[in-house]
Amino acid sequence: MLGASSDPAATIRSGPLQITSPPGPRLVRRPTRLAVLLAVCPDATVRDGKKALEAARRGHELAKGPTELAALAAARAELGEFDQAVEWQEKAIAAAPKTLSDQYRERLKLYQDRKPYRFE
Picture 1 (cartoon, one colour):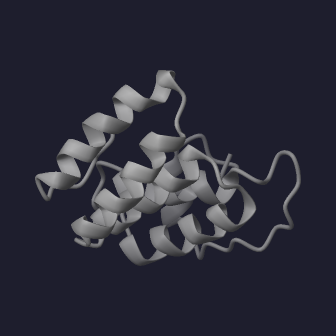
Picture 2 (cartoon, rainbow, N blue to C red):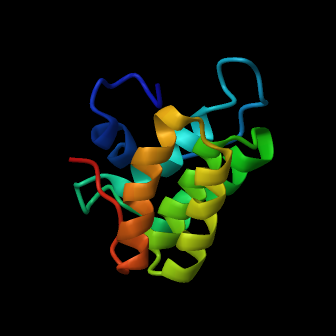
Picture 3 (cartoon, helix red, strand yellow):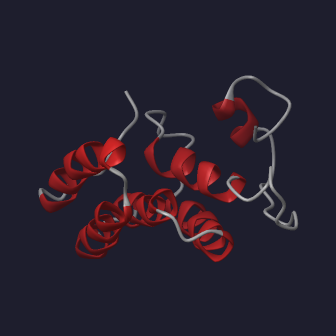
């Protein structure tokens, strides 16, 4: 996980975030998970579009899958950059397996409507 706490929001609020770990089998997805949390958390005190984009870019450097593309889209949407969010989400849909593509299409509709995605 992101830290020792079982509450990701508490982990985020507890101190500065650093994405400096070298990639490894267990660490490759960490920046992407962090980006998604920072972009879509329902708690506004946790959301930070700039940090989300930074983490999403790092995640995309480490892995080029649909999850990383969707994280870039979510970060762009959190920043209010909906046209770019749509572009990244369309790339995520094209790269996603069927099990994810329907969920990703729902997010695309939000971005097209100029709304960010939020965890429920």
